Amino acid sequence: MSARGKAAIVGAAESDLGAVGSGFTPLDLIGQATERVLTDAGLEKKDIDGLFSASVYYQMPTLVVGEYLGIRPRYSDATMMGGSSFVSHLLHAAAAIEAGLCEVALVAYASTQLSEGGFRGVSDPPNPFETPYRARYPVSMYALAASRHMYEYGTTREQLAEVAVAARQWAKLNPKAFMRDDLTVEDVLASRMISSPLSLLDCCLVTDGGGALLVTSSERAKDLRKPPVYLLGAGEAHWHRNISQMPDLTVTAAADSGRRAYEMAGVGPESVDVTMLYDAFTINPILFLEDLGFCEKGEGGTFVEGGRTAPGGELPVNTNGGGLSYNHPGMYGLLLLIEAVRQLRGECGERQVEGAEVALAHGNGGVLSSQVTAVLGTQSVL
Amino acid sequence: MEELSEEMASAEAPAITYRRHLERGKLGYQRCAECSAAVFYPRVLCPLCGSGALEWRESAGRGTVYATTALHSRNRDPRNVVLVDLDEGFRMMSRVEGLPAGEVEIGARVRFEVRRGEEDEPVAVFVREEG
Ligand SMILES: [Zn+2]
Image (cartoon, rainbow over all chains, first blue to last red; front, top):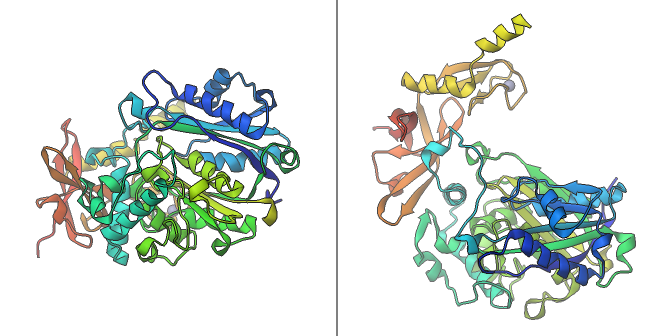
């Protein structure tokens, strides 16, 4: 059984973003996003019977979100794999809808970390095999992967910086982006070193923000307010949690998740018009371009040179400005899905990719640990 | 029930056995009796084949730096975190001591030593192999 085209995203909305002010909780932002997403879809709250959420705040996220919103779901999924969780929720929602376990699924997430004073991470118990070395979580783990990619393939800090510059150029076209000042490769190289080879501007933002998606059957999607964005294919994979257990630091499980997503969708990377790659750090899009088949292993650094993924380049990547320049509320996977939906609806204004029919949204979680890929499409490619 | 209790009492947690090795100046790891995989971090079943027949071994403590990063802080010298591939075929996180954090190179040969951590616990570190 394939889930191809069986479910569609019919609503997509952000909460307030950036720095929302003290006193607001993640649940308040989820409330904002939920009101907006219902309007976007033309559905009512009472239509929601499936609830999907993940959190670093709440151990039982769907319970507390359900309570706040006044939703009594008959299907609930709090899969927590870091920032990729929400791409996973999309696949799980499609499967639950296909199985008849729910009909209208709400996927919701928010964080108010910036207004609380800074980065809010996960709180696992200490690991006696990593904790004593006081690596800075998660940047040092991504730095280790970048160091290895540079060693094996000659990837340079300049190439990493190109990823940040391309993101900023997209962000300048997005009024909701947090950082919209000019940015050059030289600026990135000159920024304060955090965990070599990654400097401050190789790292994603720390912001407040959140969002919500509504997912339903393709049948029901036909009569709603906006053109449905169909889930053509999706795949999940994870091979490790701790960076010292990652088999090869230059190859992520996106090689598996991407293959699974492409197989279900019946398309390959050559068909993708808009590519959303979870850019927690500048090394991420380089690894994912390779592992998702946009270029050969080791060529990601060369691939991003010369603005190839920037506005006007041949492969539009992270058209909202990404986690690097638009918004990164601790976990970003839901926001990259929202941008993919908007691109396929043609709602992106200045940054719109003309004639976009297929979008790839790739979520990353943990320390290059969880990889979840979704391929979305318009009615025309169904 | 009595037999079961005795059996349970005789088992030692893998993390404890590992620490006992460190206390004696040794780097312990496990070898799977079924599939011969080198296993680290220590656990109770082989992550390759699923066998519970893991045997403790002492590493010769020689390895090669696989990946490295230097962590920068505002008022301190940078410090280093590495992943080391031990010659017996397992990988671990550690740090390389005895040279500036930014000068630790991938491919460098390193040798295991024990240091004391913040709470006087033994910690496995590495120093550059001479020659
Ligand atoms: Zn085995």
